[in-house]
Length: 328
Image (cartoon, rainbow, N blue to C red; front, side, top):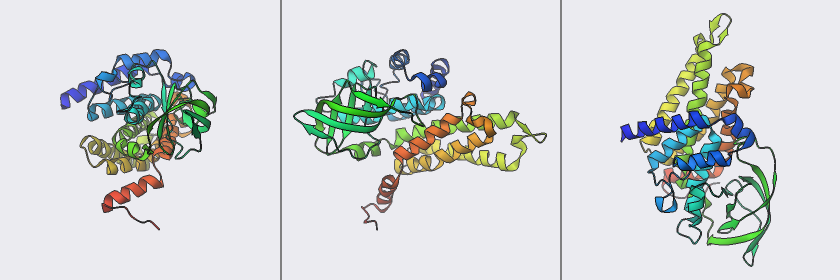
């Protein structure tokens, strides 16, 4: 299996090198041509069963794909993650599961309302009305909404896009709803779905950490200050070496199938720190897009703010104690 995994890594890396231009993606978004390429390679619906036109890959293969793509474009990795780790489990086993065929082949765009923890929109007579704020993917054709229950809303949508710090290749903004809605489950399944996505989310974080760190190491190998290479300054080299060990520990935890609660916590705790330091090693150049490191810092901050907060720490604590804790 290790040889197969290495071949998969090389295949994904080669695809990314040829097809993922992050500057273009952040400016123009993930266009239809790139979406089609991702679908044809089997990356777009990689964890979705083949009966829904997906690749039906195992968890390890799925995480390898996310890690490798995140090294080049966290935006594209997030697009794949939302489809496979959030949309798929929300619609699977429901009357809406047939939409997976079009989603896996790139015929439709999907989005999931996972940034807002609760919405106040009303569902009346098969329609949902109101404003849905902070949607990552306002150009979607189908949208999963978590409110009192779990529902699927069909487009087209009226939207208002605005600038977003991270994952800029995915259109971000508000949706003004007066659309048909289909109830998938009477319970809100967001927490359950998010917990099962800890592994894939950690894989994206790992890819971002690995790429940002490598850019910092490469830069300190060629950049000089006060007549010496940056790598010769102990505070710089020691910290980058420590971060490399962090990357290796995270990779071994993820693919060694360590408890996903701990792996996810470890990834989120180090993601922003490493991305920020990678920018800092470049000095002022780190904030220029041409050096390709600032996007990891922006995306890291957004990813941590979306996926990691008090609620996740509560879940981790409950997991450690093997029971629900009554926090004060």
